[in-house]
Image 1: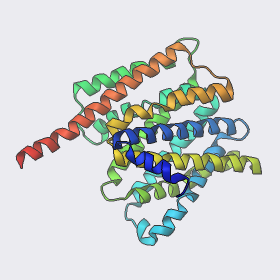
Image 2: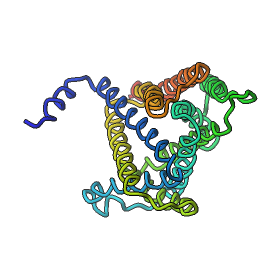
Image 3: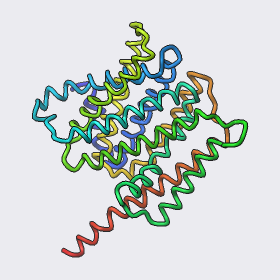
Image 4: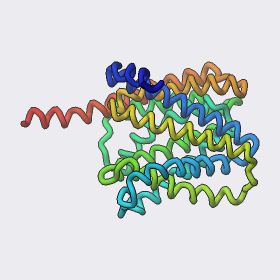
Length: 307
């Protein structure tokens, strides 16, 4: 029996929702580690270059999957949508690497949790989805939490803190485009083409600040991308076992993991008001996830009664 055999057998005995939660906690640690790597590498190299190599090596990790699926696995007629998603991902990459280079990891992570708020607003504005007063109230509460972290008008306000919010808006656009693509496109194809278009989009601005990377930089950039790819695979397994609304609370483990790594690696400590704002954002986003899950189940329940 392999060394992984007993571990795999033990995991199989755990109920699927609990196992999905464990997977999400591991994925959250992987993502927090990637953020710490980005901040560290961005102190010695242009942040744009860090983001470019993150995307390039991430794309290389897809090659074994392509060998398995063949040309038919990536054949598509939706290149415009993929190119648009690649541009949005490039925007996310650029704003995020600069956010991590200019501000503490934990504070950037806390502000980045506003993604569900931007998703709700984007779905209402661009997809015509109806957003009821309860979800609008949750959006308002989430914005309040962001303002507590930002503290505009006070001495502690950092203009760089707007970058994680820009990242969150870009990630929301990504999710909305994913909804559009998911109607016909399998996950492997979406991941491949997102990296396929994002890599050249991030290369163009990177050439303006290009510095030849050292072997040490390339090694750590490769390690960062490997950890990020593993985190994405583990997260995908979690979403195959449980609904997004069930897993949403576990994604917030990125914040304490980010705070811990920020303290250990950079001596950063998030202050009390920032923790308060992060908690308010957490509550607002969890309520939005709860309402969306409830609204999804309602039509299915009605359909079941009709039959």
